[in-house]
Image (cartoon, rainbow, N blue to C red; front, side, top):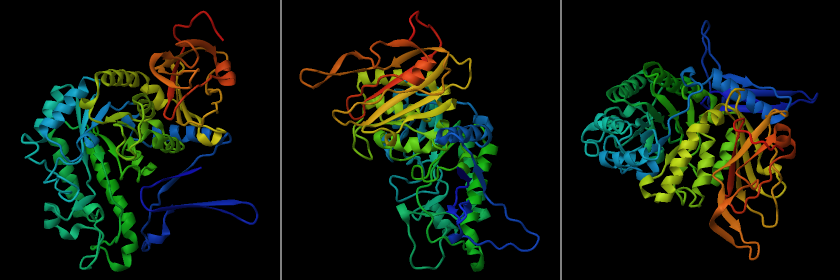
Length: 521
C-alpha cells in the first residue's frame, strides 16, 4: 500500500504490464504542474510511504498507524490524549458572544469537559459566511472584553480554550481584501471569478501574505492563553493564478501555494509548540499524511451522523491512527442528515476518535446529562488504549452475509496495561429474521485469562409474545451477566454472542486482567 505525504494536487496510479509486473506511480499531479528547473537548482518531490503486508489490510493498518504516530505526527503529541472539548459551532453557529460562550462552558464543565473551542463568528463583522474572513481581530460587540477577557473567564472555570481560524481565505467583504485586493489567487483584471462560499483564496505563494498571516496568528496566540487551534479551509482552489509569478511559470503555483501553507503551519508549531492544531478542510477534504506532519489530529468529516461516520471512520482507519481521527458527539436529529441515534451510539463512535462534543449541553435532560458525564469519564479511562493500542476492524458490512454492522477493537501494546482491550459493536441496519454471527476477537494471548465486562448495557428488550420493543427495563447483557472470565483462546476462537435489535443499537466491552472471578470459560 502507498500513502503520499503531500496535501496538494496528486496522482496515484497502478499499471500492470504485459509481463505481469505492477508499476505504481505517485506524486504531484502533472495536469496542473510544470516546474522550471534551471541548471544547478533542485526540486524536492513529496515523499511516498510504502507498506508491505503479508497478512492483509490489518497488518498494513498496524504498520501505517505505528509509523505515523511515532515518526510523522509532531513528537510533542506522541501518546498524549487530547482534552475533551466542546465546540460552539452546532450549538451557536455564527451567533456567538462572551455571555453565550461562557454559559456553554459553565454547563459543559459540569459534565467533565476540559476545553471549549470558539468556532466561526468571533472576528471582524462576521455574522454569516459573507464577510470578514481575513480580519482576525475579535468582534468587540460580541466580545467587549476581547478574547483575553473571555479566555480569562473560561480558564477560571477550570477549562482550556481553543479557537477556530481559516487563514488561507478572505471574503471580498473584508478589511483585508479592501487593502490588498491583489493578494488573492486569481488573475487580476478578469471579469469573472468564482467566489465559492463568498470567499477567495489568499495567494500563499506571496511572501507578504505569509508574513501577514504569521503576524496575525502570533498576535492572536500571544494575547491569550489559547491552547488549541482549529485551522479550517472551506473552498476549492479555482482559477488559480499567481499574479507575482511569470506567465510561463504558472504551472508552479499550486505546488508553491502548498509549500506556503506548510511554511505557516511550521511557524505556528515552532513559535507555539504548546498549541494543539486540528486541521480541517470542509470536513475531511485535506485528510492526508502531509497535514499530520504539522497537526496531531484532523477533522474527519462535517458529516457527524453516526451511521455515516461508521463507514467514514472505518475507511479512514485503513491508513490513519485512531488518535488523529476527529470525532464528536453531536445533537439529534443530526444537523446534516436529520437522522436519530442514541447518545450511547454517538459516544461509542466518538470514542474511537479524538472525542469531543458539538451540541448544546444546556438543552439536555437531567438523565442525558448524567449519561453524558459517565461517558466522558469512561472516555478518559479508556482513551490511552483506544488511541494508541493495536486497532482491529473486527466487522465491516461487506464481511457479513446479511446485517450491516461494524465492530472495532483496540488492544493495549503495553503488556502491563490494566485495560487490555476495548471493543465496540454498532448495528447500522437491521434485517428482520437475520442474526449476527458470534464476535471473535483478535490480538489477545490465547493462554491468558481475561475478564470481559460489558459497559453501559442496553435497557431495551423484545417482548417475545408480541415482538414489541420495550424500553426502560433491566439491563440486557449480551452474555447474560455483567462480566465473565474467558481465556484468550475462547474469545478469539469461540467468540461472544451479539444480539442487537434495531438500527443504531450498540454494545461495548472492556477486557482486563484485574479481579478475575473463580469461574472461567
